[in-house]
Length: 376
Ligand code: ATP
Ligand code: SF4
Picture 1 (cartoon, rainbow, N blue to C red):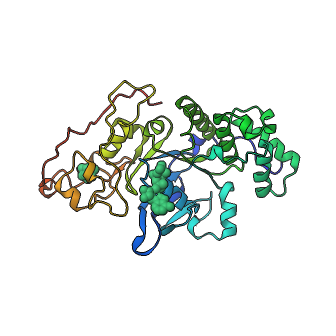
Picture 2: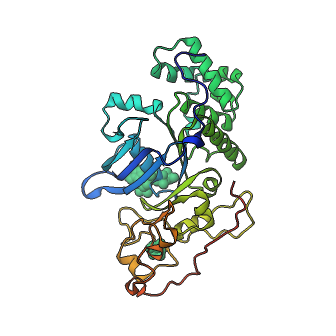
């Protein structure tokens, strides 16, 4: 066995996937530009990733998902700037460190070793003129300078095997691999140094749905084996319903709901989560009409007042345009790990007349349950 790499499965994920945080995003605000022209794309987001969990981050294009994860991992390209907040990374048995305060050298060590990121369209970011082995070798040599060439080759072969690719493919060029294989190579590279956190930004959108699900199934079984936590970013909530443990939904740069994946699927509380669930067909669920969400995402240079969704929301009340609903646990969810930012579910919503004194809700009643088909 290689001396430079730990190798071998870690403690099974589920044994450690309790409520131990590995990454805590606190009150993170991210803007593009500065001064009067600045656009705030992420507003004071709080989000905790627990050890060994798959956390799905969903929302339409422009809702701020990528800005949030790149801000939190300090990979935000200019003119993006983190305007406030903390990102606490918990090493086992140590005090948490704030990723936003790491020096450049500390940040280099943090990336790949402790948190790796697979970017949007990453399968096209393999170097087209270098064989797969060379690409692994570059990454491994940079982070394990004491390793030998033979150890790195062995490690690269092990990693390819992990993602179901024959190690003979180490001598292939990227163009000789299918899209799905290139994507699995990228996932293998992200796992190369056994990080605790893997962030994936829409890694499978260029693939057909069958291949997407195949890769996600493989990712989950790798997670079960090695115990890393995953933040999986996608606009396709139906994918997350099948593969994530917990789901956070973003709209207009804010978190609007977060819940256990099954709870979110069975009883979406926020009208936006409900609309997103109705925007994608489920591969195995019942055939149903897709209604989606009418209207377009907000212009973040001039966001709507109050609840950012109110111009598109069939349930909007007078209070919605005037006051922004805080993310809070609804009375009906007391004791559960679930939060929603909507006046319909706010702890005070049941009683106070001032919350419902405007035009009554006009849309149909919010559904409270759907079929369980399609949840794995
Ligand atoms: P997508 O799935 O399309 O990547 P997303 O949910 O990840 O969408 P972001 O890419 O984070 O959303 O973008 C959030 C918002 O930030 C956008 O609506 C846009 O207004 C703003 N934004 C993103 N990049 C820039 C930029 N370079 N300059 C100015 N504004 C930007
Ligand atoms: Fe709709 Fe009002 Fe809830 Fe916003 S707060 S989602 S506008 S009901």
